[in-house]
Image (tube, rainbow, N blue to C red; front, side, top):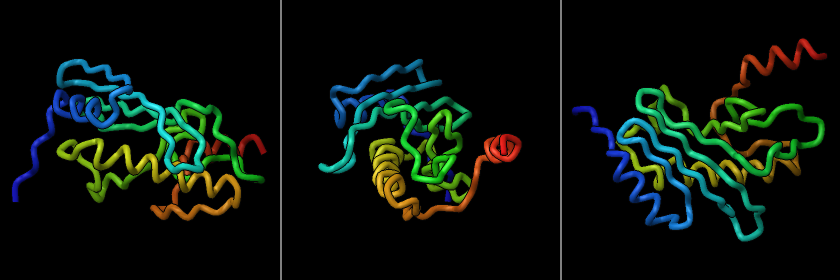
Length: 150
């Protein structure tokens, strides 16, 4: 079975615009795409401005831009399942398992996954328990920084 080809950023941008007409999209040819939009994951949720940034050869990164900083659960010093608490860069998939590749539409993967992460974040912020699954990890740089501050 051959490797699936990358979906053109023109198609990704058009699909994003059709699903989220009020979103902002900046595309630099087939090299880079940045999408920003405010989402409300559930009718009871707060609204969050998220940004998806894809750069050819570097993959896709998803950030929560607003609110910033996200409220931490009582007694917690770092957000759960993020690559960076200060950047609020979400951990949405495990790259080694190839759960996401550039051959998949953002509107069917990264964006719903980000909304799901936000739902689990809202529960975590109240309970202190992460029910979102995933592989347990900490950002090593933040872990070192936190240990040095203690």
